[in-house]
Length: 481
Image (cartoon, rainbow, N blue to C red):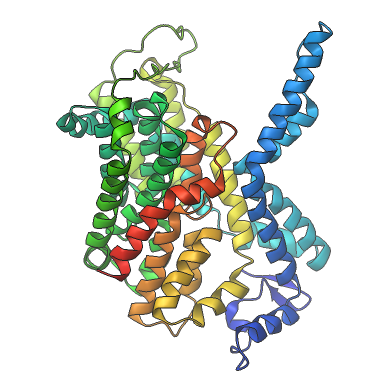
């Protein structure tokens, strides 16, 4: 449904705009701004939100400095230590996961002032689709449970044992097998499992800063690319599979082997670059993982019993239910509520189920779709104005600053695309899916889990550097081979 503002639908459907201007792209965009002036406001706020994500780590550093300064003064005066309100506010602004939700409040206020409160609530409640953020919250929470992580770790250990179960062997197994597994269990689940296993088996060894960013960038790119072997696992593919008639055989023949080659070659290339440090990490002992029990009457120092097979099967069933019903929030949220009761009943075998990270990631994605729904006015004509090769690289670049599922969804609204240009758009969308935290829906989940290993947070520019090599390898896989 579309909201109505001043007699026109809000936001105006792309079909309501006049045909592209013969005077070029800029004339087309100017014409659309004249029809819907709020387009400019929404895009400026979105651009500011993107800039905020790049500055988030600076807010975090400033928050730590203010807190340290207040603590030093309190110690000198022999006063109790208290949190600094200013530091906590800055820390809030430094949380990447709240950025788009924060600026969604700003865009909602601007929208209310421009087109009225009724239209604003209609857009936020009836027009924006929150299914993907809700799905990510649920699948991330399920994938991070003790039985699922124990199962995944056991499977990865069989592969890592082939290389002596060293840090390098674990690293290779997680970053090759995990992302490709995402084509079956969905990319958000694969990202959650891979990030948790990397946390337990690799980042706990305290690798160098360069290797940390290389690993994070590689993880983001591999997950973005690795989910393209099927038509239901990667968000950008989901957007186009039904409108364009793509099924799993099509994905395997057009994307599958190229995606697999890109994942394997990128991972082996980084391993070759860091092989000396990988050998050094083999001599370090990982920090023991402390599993906080779910049961309230069990001490945190008491080891949890082994996970029974029947409990693992039950958790797999809950995950399968969520994946199969990923388009139906009432079903997968209902299943998740049932799971919470089940987890409580089996608390003797469960570690603490952490919901903070999944909820923050869901908030991030919800804010992103609020902004994204207002950007089609300029993204669609940009896509329509490009030929196949520029379209591929344009899609890659746009993906870095917009969720790649939004790019491919808008492409389905362009009626003049050939089969080759359709493939180019999706290839570009998954190629650029690791360049920034907002480029692919599962990325915030990986960052939320691994950010504790990056001091004041993940630096966006260093993430781009870490993702650059695997991105270039993917370009070669999709456009050269």
